[in-house]
Image (cartoon, rainbow, N blue to C red; front, top):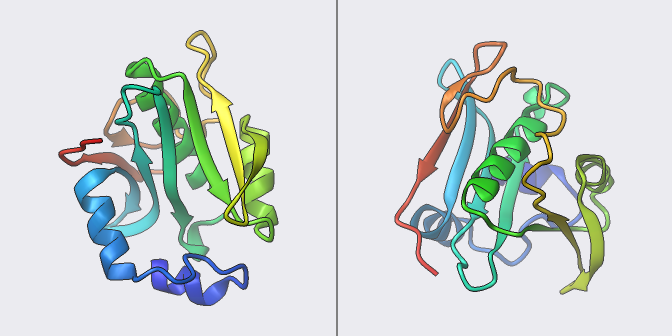
Length: 165
């Protein structure tokens, strides 16, 4: 899915990144939130929620397969990430996005992220984790925890690795 996304977008998605090494790093150090249906991966979010000093979590990757776009997959994955971050009493969730990726910028802004500057040519966005705030825009029905079935029968699961700082 990452290779297809890299080929599809013109904004330099993961430019200069060796995909195998990047995936290995994600598998070793991040938590992967995966949305699938019928054994087919619809979307993946890689979350780093392990910096206990700053209590700032970071989304390293969010990608939805082209055939699953417009079905609320990204919002469901973002909601699951927020639940994870809040459950650990982290204060902030960050993400970086290419300025050319207007669809992602609009999605993150609608979700509640605010732009806070530019770093390495990417727009840094953050969202404060307000613990009394309800989960935003979920299309998957009630909170089913780390693993459950969405309204359309899609599996939403968390694959937790041995994360360390």
